Picture (spheres, rainbow, N blue to C red):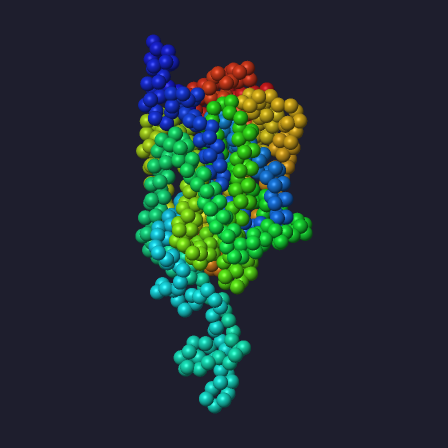
Length: 639
């Protein structure tokens, strides 16, 4: 990475340095790293990390998992998986990015053979970023639609069909004909012939809620399947454009601007969740909903089931956003001696407690919905899109002042999604900065806005009438196995090949030496427990693979094949880059492999003042780029 250059007759300090950095508007005069910049405040970083980790899954997935996996008993495997899988990997990634001040691709100077892992992380983040902003666009659309005296999905309307109803619909019954015979007929025939059903002979089917038909017929204009693309839904396209404009405006100065925006986007969801909890707790049936969530339904016998532990581990892994590259990217802007250990604990605990807290807010209102509809809570509980855009809007429509609560809820979803999106885009721009530092210094804003424009155009397929099918397809394939593979290789490469003890020494250079007992737990997790758990989750998910579907509509073979192509495209760079590194190295095959398993000669703390004796021979970053492969003599020998 290039550093600021000064004429040979000047020293790079004082006024000259300030002048140079002033051209680079994402760098402050007081920043420790004048090339890349640092967070303006510690709180900027922490809130950005909390915003990245706390996302839509905390609201629309965790409460449902808790309900279906034993209620309060689920918190036991959840907490254990946090300690064994989530926190160790989270701490590892934060330490890695902070130590080298590099993004998720360039940080693999630590182990050149595995640089493809960083590329995989960034590619998967790009795929997910494309559809994640579409979900933010959905939230914008529903928020705008809520600015009415009455929520448009409160009642069945001109856009609904005959199946639209909150109560069961009579489909068949027995009737008396004119000749006195009793026959079993379709209810539509009864209506047409002015007969009436014999009491007790009715056969019912569940009607579709107004909110469900509104979601399908109005918001999405959903087609019959992914192979019926239809046209672009113009108002969703405009909402998607607005979402990208918000993201671009928040990030055009990098962390200097996004670090300020997250004070609102990271904190506002807690305000809304608290308001919704207070409102929900005052409603009839709220206690029933909460008891279903975590109280009376606690079932400790569920802990004997492997599925419960798998769900806990999976939720922890994905909700903390590990192995996406974002944690490395955000931490790379920390000052070298920042206490990343305490940061990791604070962020992880905040994320998990947020999930539990969100469950109370969600289930208190779902309990009220079940009460007034005469159903059990189990009949109204949903997850994912069904919760966010069908079940919860339906519950809000039945509250006094429904539009106000709806605006609050969807604005909360908007802010939950935005700060996660900020970190994802920062992952992409940080990667570009590490590869092309001079271009980013001069053109950070145009490059950032250019990335947003390209991703917006790629996302247009997700706002067609078949858009929801594309979102499900990308999420099903790209947000699953690829991340698990990257996480396993990341921890194996750094701990088993680079060396766990060596990595601990690197961390101690930043946060100070610790007693051996302090590291005993981390060694146990990093060397054995965490990689074994992640491997078990990967194998389980592959064994339990099922064809994706949406609304009980299965995907055609070509769509499934395309999904496999997307994930293969993301992970294929791991062996490709490894092969390129080995070919470009010198010596015999064995020597080349050994050489590529050693840190590059420019691996170490970015600034010379932090290198100490351990990295005193480190080559300056700008003297050897990531594209160059260290030779035997140029590699850093094991210490």
